Amino acid sequence: MKKSKIIILLILIFCIAGGIWYYWKWGEDLRFAKKLGAGINIGNSLDATGLRNYNPNASELDYETFWNDEPITRQMLRTIAAAGFQTVRIPITWEDHLDAEGMIAEEWMNRVETVVQYALDEGLYVIINLHHEMWLDLKAGKEEEISRLFQTVWMQVAERFASYEEHLIFESMNEPRLRDSIHEWDEGTAELRDMVNHLNRIFVDTVRGSRGKNKKRYLMISPYASNHEEKALQDLEIPGSHIIVSVHTYIPYDFCQNEEGTKEWNKEDAESRQKILTVLENIDRYFLQRGVPVSFTEFGCKNKDNLKARKEWTDFFVKEAKKHGIPYVWWDDGGDYALLDRSKNNWIWPELVEILTK
Image 1 (cartoon, rainbow, N blue to C red):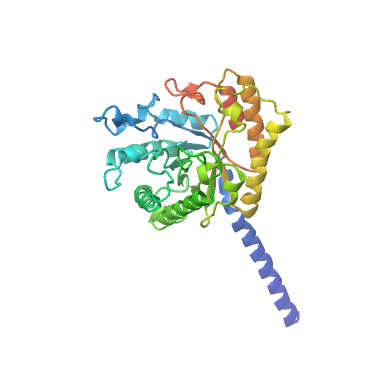
Image 2 (cartoon, rainbow, N blue to C red):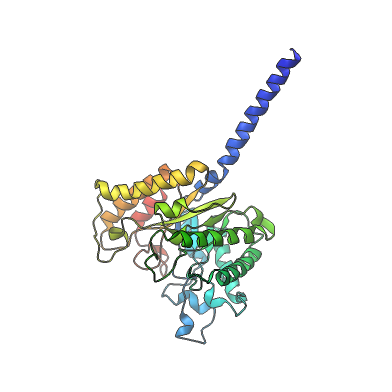
């Protein structure tokens, strides 16, 4: 074979190998996200707040049951895994467990680690976050103060869990927003979206700058208010790789959340169906087509004595999410959205669990 032909062949082999490598790396994060599959939140437990307003002498661990939910047990996590869930999201509020310098109480950190270990022992992926932090209110002029405490808390969490492998995922914030404003639950203003991007960068830099497995740990970031509206998604910046976008979807609102809304869901209703499909189309356009995975870290519909409609809505949502390869995590608050009876450790609505996990 002539030398020129050998060179051409080597170039061709190099190009093909490079293309395969690029394609594999491009899809790496998407492939990881698909492993998260179906998930469930254990809400209103480690994220409970405000106890010391009523009982100044309350202990750190008293908070876990303050909002009338049972303490999280190993058996709860075993039941969740046995049902076929792959992921558990454990919302955590750190605010009431910080001293004046922002240092986390050791007893509280130990309890969080114990619960995380319960879940990991059952083979579950685990998401932990900053949840009901009232200081994390996106007020103008407070950015420096918020950023400083935000970094301090995440430095401690990253350090404590540095040796944990990829089944543990950190989520930067839950529904970061300007409270009690006209923009609290919409897509926010450009300035508010910029502040969220700024905090997400601090989060990623802080975790990546720590030791151990945090260098490559998968991290979740939220758009403004964890909102699914197009502008909130479009303006979200992705600071690096191994990033998953965390979005919340309770749509249509009148069916899923509004107490005064409707009990009825009809998948044949074009308007209701299209609201969900539009969110999925925007997620595909702004993230999935770029190789950036997305997870619905909260979704669900509250119980209004309308099991048939809830089953139909859940089935439609799950099937459409799966078409896009998007994992989903049901919001279980121990109340109107509850699937798991935490006192008896059995399923209240096994029909919904089957739809989620099948």
